[in-house]
Image (tube, rainbow, N blue to C red; front, side):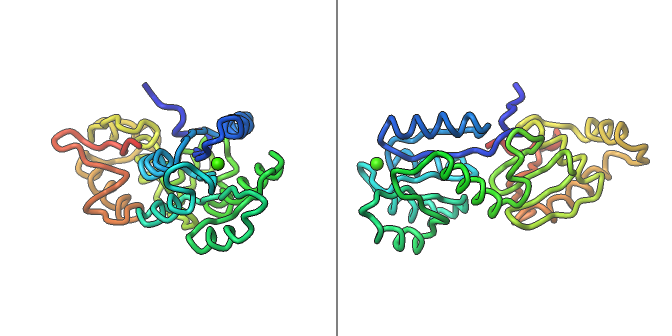
Length: 239
Ligand code: CA
């Protein structure tokens, strides 16, 4: 089944042990069109954050087990770059400094209004992903820090714009629209023919994919996004 989450809202992870608070925030965020996951402890938050690379993490400082600071430290140590908004209590002013030093992007003091929370979240998403982050509900595909805006035909990794040829964009669009679905070279060729009367053969698909990887991947020889399925074709990585 095609997972529509890939082309919809930004994903937000809430790490908060107080159930009523967590559910209240979750509900409000879902109303705004965000895709929300809850974690009830630091350990669970850490696991979900490093596994799913959510677009943003709401992280409470006071948690049972490992606290929010330790979660933050380990998230950053694991290389997860998602923006983190820390939630602190009023008497934890000093914590803010520690949080920012550990790599938090912003903090909010409890109790806070939902409107304030929404505006902080929007600002963080915009700062991290540019204009594309506003498109909760828009035709946007996200995978980690890779953002593909289908309507505007724009591709970004984090803040960095990636310039693709029309053919490269079309290949990426088809693959990324159905993560895990394997496309043969001849299928891709057919899809490109629909898009443009291209005089190409299956071997040119390899060349386009190679160029696409050079632009998109940190290490094109070990692609994180566009993967080769040996003897069959290509597939976009699943989350
Ligand atoms: Ca708490």
